[in-house]
Image 1 (cartoon, helix red, strand yellow):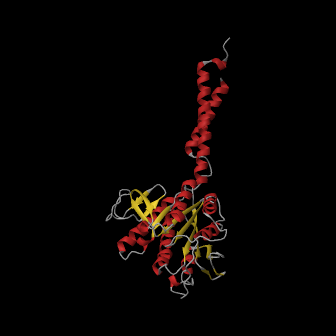
Image 2 (cartoon, rainbow, N blue to C red):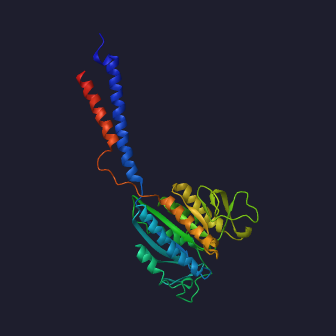
Image 3 (cartoon, one colour):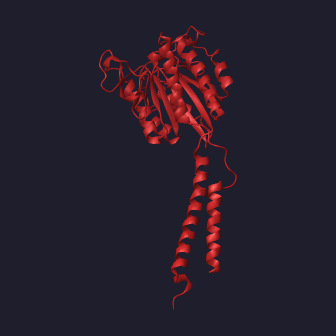
Length: 330
């Protein structure tokens, strides 16, 4: 004899009830996941070359542009922000001279702190580029050690984006002793989920570039080349004037994009010569592009977390309950 469970209508109702309940369960998970993954703050460390080749305008730009970035992040609700400064060069005021045999070449000027502390610190850093110290700190610059130790400052997890802005106008001077090699710094940045942005002396060329064409201001991890006043196109990085002795691309460009590919969090390379341009419109375009890429990488803050399931989820739960009660009566 057929039972109630064999009734086609009852079977259909049971199936619908299960589907609705499953949808409600998935919706609850989805809403929670959105709130868990979104960022609402940033820890941003500037790692800068303090050798004599760096220019006053480089540091003025770092001070003012990071301040502008913070203002725009605050406008998007990303307000739990901290900023820091770390240098690298031949001489460290804290540790003394550095040589290839003794690569002590970086120091922390400001741990992650408020934007006010960040901008104020530029007035006191003893570096020729800041106009505060006649001593040149150059000849030997290895950025890997500074990047590695800088990443160790990131002590907040969860919804805080971790960003390093790295700036130099030279390739890497490699230590003769066992220092931080490519794989070591790459793995450190990947494991710590760091977004690396590098401002370098490098040619950023749109595909099909010929002499006379405009070079790009920036190249992101998706291969998009950003030329001033033009739509993004695909592009690539190359050493300036094809200098075979210059290892900037393999030292820092490859590192930036290798980390970005592994983390999926983004990353970009910028041409420092655009930052130093005497043409105000070029500098303005460069600054705007830098900020836009950073805003895109960090993203807006999430909507306030809902303490209870959303109205859609509540409706699905209610429908599931009604279907279950109907089944019980039958």
